[in-house]
Amino acid sequence: MAILIGLASSVLFAAAEGAAHATEAAHAAEGAEHKTGLPQLAIETFVGQLFWLAISFVFLFLVLTFLVIPRIRGVLETRRARVAGDLAAAAAAKGEADAALKAYEKAVEDARSRGRALAEDTRKATKADSDAKRAEAEAALAVKIADAEAQVAATKTEALTHIRAVASDTAAEIYARLTGETVTAADAASAVDAAMAR
Image 1 (cartoon, rainbow, N blue to C red):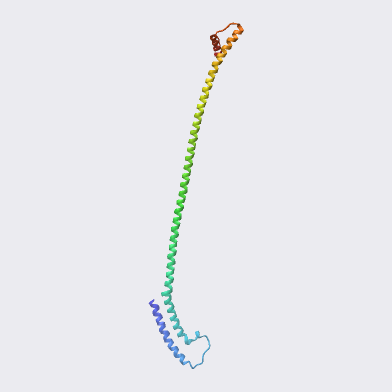
Image 2: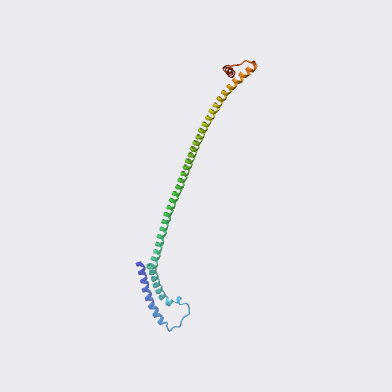
């Protein structure tokens, strides 16, 4: 920076000295005839042009160095900080989204497990209820069958008793008609019992 300022001041002094010489030469040539052509290429004005070029360069350099570049640097730093903050926020949001997704998947898996367990419990309860009702129905049916068998046995016993009595009476009457002799009820019953035993 000090080198540039020293260089600029030396250029300024040289330009000022050249401007003074140019002014003297211009006064001397006042009486001379005016030349045509581009004024930028006139050798007489080179020193003044260099002087103003140096002043403009130093001015632009100072403006850029102390005003424009710091503002651009500040904008870039602000933008860099904002981008870094946005990236950090995006990473945090991604982490939260991943955590929410894991929590959702765990909740779904837990719900499926509970659903399977509930279905299994319902199936077991239904099977137990069905088995209990079937056992109850079988027990009731067994009681009815036992009652029916007892009733059939009682009816059979009663029928056999009546058949024996009817058979004894019939046998005594048939014997009496065929032979003309009467048979006692005890003899007829013993004859029927002997015939049934065969």
